[in-house]
Length: 71
Image (cartoon, rainbow, N blue to C red):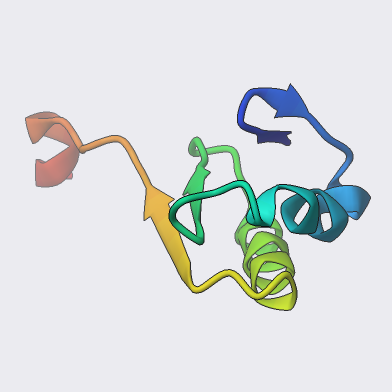
């Protein structure tokens, strides 16, 4: 797990978000995950963002190819 390119331990996520919150222009968390990410991990990130009082959570993903869209 990374915040702004810095690797962090998942159990420290809320504290890390709180540490950077005041330095951010936009109070939002952008989650980028690949197909191997479990939904339970995304939920943990959402919970940490809420606990750190971020106002917006964005889930960013890769667009599906035309073949993937057909499937």
